[in-house]
Length: 498
RNA sequence: GGCGGCGUAGCCAAGUGGUUCAAGGCAGCGGUUUGCAAAACCGCCAUAUGUCGCGGGUUCGAAUCCCGCCGCCGCCUCCA
Image (cartoon, rainbow, N blue to C red):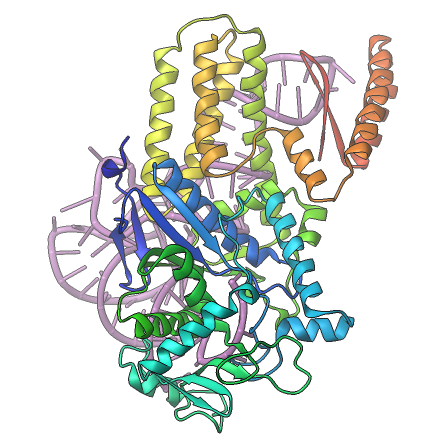
């Protein structure tokens, strides 16, 4: 398929409708997604967001686009209160732990990537740090001052909302409406309560500060995304993504800054993912119901979490529960088992052309998959197509001697759809390796564990051969109690984690 | 107060005017297989004037559009 033939439609928050996806400069696509503020471990909300955009990027590449994916690391300027007051989150953590703020940023940046790696989220092409782009941010502030869209007060610079009539367009708010129910205490320095900080004067004791034409200070939170997205993607660029909770004020502010500075559009498509809820409530630090990924991975296979996320739509909220995760875990293992069955059958398969029935069934799977993904990345529908592939694969491998052509066709479909696009790695062993990569299980320990279970399995099979089924069942039961399942197959006894 | 959204089977969750519109997963039930299991396979699993929160309406036709009501969620402060 050539790119021009694709039928991808995406929901654009800017226009509040689904639109045909047409990049500004095909075949290139620039996408910027708001990244994490690195002051704590990532949680399952981050997983939903970044898995969603990971699949979006993977699908665009699958369609043949040349994608440049930029996702920032916020290590400065993100305050604990509103955009203009409170303490810097990274600095606050550093103060509590008595380390340098950059140690905090580095520690949790690494932690974030570890968790994303475990979820098989591809690294962005560029992961720019806000602290590494102070010059670009200062330049942006200078341009806004030159154009009369901002003003300086006591070493801080604020965006002048009244100078930009389109302010609030993305979220559909007017400045007047915002004032009506505003909970923000107006700052004495601001001319208008809706004005927001571009640059803040550093108070005494503030560790992270940089020289600027307005004195020592640090950038406002929204500024980094404007500066770094356009630095690496140009202006305008194709897709800007982020969490729905950031539509206002973060994204409205980005748009205002960038468009006012350059007098041209900022991003063409705005994609927003919805939230993870726990017990129907938004998961948040203030509510104390957030679940870090490191904790989640102790209990759940990262791939099960990934499948759980992909079984809903990125624009729908997703309610997290142990019951739902258990269901996803079973589902993932079925997908994994089907792929393993195909690979195993290939070892002894006779040669030959793929049979036409399987070919047409696989083609139908691909059609359904593409139809779902083309409809605003409906991964739930795409996953359903993959389960059709699972069913076909088990039928083919169970029915007896499938030839290599048929099995290759099935494996190719798994590789392209489940693995390349949805990022569901195939194979139980690969999942175990992801645990190792995430530091949850040492490779050496896994090897010892495997050997131990093999010995127990041998003992059990000796008992079975002697028809001592009581002993055989006892060994199986004891392993089951510690979460290891034994299965007797034609090819011998297999084991897996429960 | 303003803005946006949701309510689909035991659980999670697609679908937003009409042939496949009630996907898919999990759980469950019956059968094949197995020393017994597990896995896999086959079948069943939202059905009737009263199926998609409830009540009206529009339409030849609605889960899907409109109105009202009930319940819930998000944003308007930081948050993926």
